[in-house]
Length: 275
Image 1 (cartoon, helix red, strand yellow):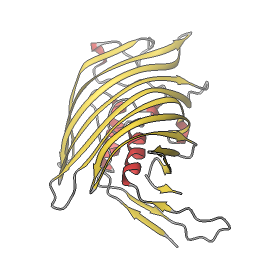
Image 2 (image 1 turned 135 degrees about the vertical axis):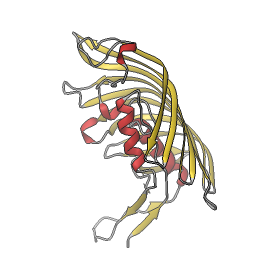
Image 3 (image 1 turned 60 degrees about the vertical axis):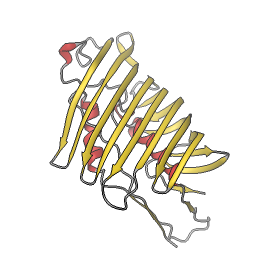
Image 4 (image 1 turned 90 degrees about the vertical axis):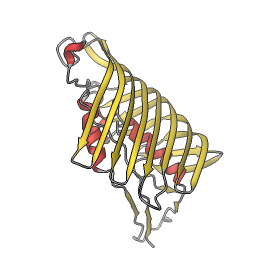
């Protein structure tokens, strides 16, 4: 038997005329903004039982929101870029991180940019960033980052608001910088207000504390170890929630979420829950 599950979940957006890192993730996310369709196929006969899918919109939203926040879908620094420095449009206002002298601070308290994707999606972002490379013998071994962004925008049929902050300590785990550790916090408040009749507003307000995350950059930012504690408040269609819980990662972009004493196995990229 095949299972089919669909839920139009709008992805995060962001661009920057301040950070190329933010710009790349932002435009890629906007392309996906129309929604996501999740398909689970389990039609092949197998000696092992086929996992059953579970419908819990709140848990799905928490899992996907965390992954999207980590890879920069709502702004800020993306762990997908490893130890690469953010590229600033106007580096002359402070230390240039992409030059030869890169072990130092970059502080910008005046991020302010507009984004237009065609004639349909428009946004305005403001905020600040403080970025500092950690170096050993003039070699990058990690960075500290604190950023805060507020984005408001409109698209056909809806408006959106993102309040997003990151406070990271990132360290390299191998000489190639393809594996990193991440400790810190994320605040990810995402709201969609729909103007189309019959469409319910979507609100996801999450706070995460990251402890000992290990991320494989070469495997699409696969989190292989570590734990996250979170608080989550939100509404999706007719479902509302107010949760506290933990996320434990076991690779393959999957994690175990424990919420109110219940355990869920969740795909972080699709939100599909299986038993």
